[in-house]
Length: 259
Image 1: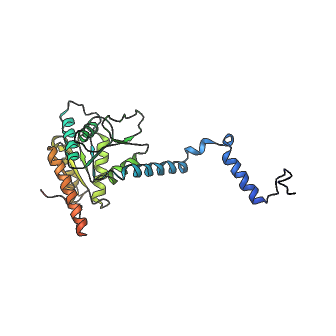
Image 2: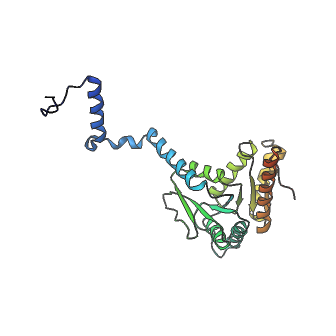
Image 3: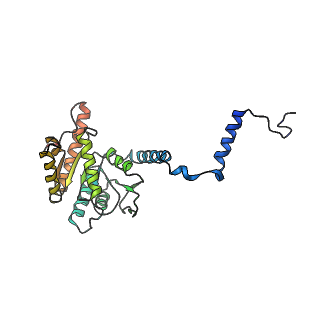
């Protein structure tokens, strides 16, 4: 009769015993110290999960453009109306609209995309004061880490249209300009909407050029307009240039669009 038949456990060698003890520890929640979830090592897994979730949810949206602008833009503001028109024109051109998912200019662009029958996407961010997603989103992806969210804007957009905004808008704009300037992203173009608003910034960029902090061509990495149709045409033209260059297998898709 075996030891099992006698109701006894068979002897284990030291290695097996240690492995079994480790398995018991894994299943014993009463002995778990939750402090490990606050370590940098553990945060790597949360960061990975945000990347994986973002890739899975956004990989099928098709050609898209990100529209940025202040969450504080009131609905009666002229820029709100223009952002709505830009969103509608992008949608009618078969281009999905991505925003930060909040109110103001972001809401306007998502609202216009919905009106134009296109896909309206919001990449929302967890903030201490809780940014509430707007009501015009077909797809909303939530992020905890700003840098993961920013990568999603760049990865899934063929260009940015920047409406007047604050620090967040400036952050996205200058990061995109830096990536274009350094050749890290070539299939990309930036449009700044609202010549009056961007006038002082353009003068400051001229100062950078005068001091040789940037090169002459760096002031041509974006275009300024006050016309919603023009803003969309610039992006669409660049998309066609990129598609043609890809078909030809040559050329520089980062070159400025003509016209």
